[in-house]
Length: 534
Image (cartoon, rainbow, N blue to C red; front, side):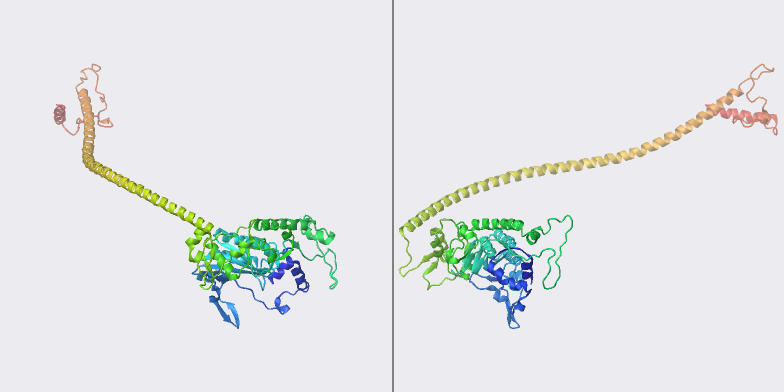
């Protein structure tokens, strides 16, 4: 259903015209699945071949309801089980669409499978088995992405045509490293781009339903569907032809780059039998097993085919390789049996007769020259090894001397460091002792300061007391005189008992005592005061 939907909705195609006309009844009658046509056909599953040509995929298939059904997810489980080198073989069968359909995989499927297989470390390359009338012009982007992904991992991709390779199929083949056909009558070509679709004019009435077809567009949507509207309303295909010309130019450029011997005759849309374009649009004829073996050979260093204008077509057939080695066959696969000799004489296959294998004089001279070059290269390599060995020995000696000097210098530095550490430890002890003495002296100094402050306070109090006593003595020693006004009187004269406070420590007159008792108290005070002064 997906493939049919894509055919119904996509206009640009690289496809064989007679195929498109053949499916028109299907499109017009809206037959959307194969069961409606009474057709039952299964997809051709991808295959993984090992170097012995065995289809490894069969090991993972089971029988269910009388049919062979895959018992795995090809993209993940099967690849995870691979433990030996393999070639990934994928079918491009039927009309090419991006999404595929009931009987064929889409270009997106092929792209994704190619990438997943390429990521497997055992993958050696890929084969695309092509039998297609062509298809979507956009699909080439998917194919190109998958092939470039494989190339980025050093893997080759070969196109193997088994039947028809037209239009988009030919574009796909041009992106591959080499192209082979199954049969000389296989068909290749039909290079070109076309468009096919149905249109209805705005306002046109359906003759069967009586409904009128209407289209309305927003004011600024002047370019929306303009190409189709121009064709439907005015039969003006200018924009469509411009777009097709751009696609065709890209198609032709890719074909010219891939097949330099191709001329306009091969690029103007004509379909050819493979035998007519051998060496032009394809590189030779092989069986599928031979193509698989060719991928292994390329992975192991075989030279890829170079498509040049003066290429010898006959040489292509001579370079065909067999899959298996068989003692009964007259050919020897030199690259597999004698890889070093094959590298020297640059051949991949040698004929063996009853008398043995023979070389012509030119080949012998070439072989002799190459052997001489190898011997000289061997002598040069031996001299270089001796020179490098001597340099290595000298370098090791110098390194040992430097290591000894470094060890001596390091030991001296260690001794200096230990002495410095001991000196620092002694200084730390001295500093600790001095700190302890300083703390004690600080305590003593603080005690002296406290005593001094107390003494100063005591002295201040005594000075005040002495000053007070001197003032009292001075007052007592004054002579008030016998006559009034004859001398200065004491400051408290006349106050008597009315004085608000005692002016000094001298005993005051006590009326309760006799005059002799008051006098005696004063004398005792004076004596005590004199004792304090002295």
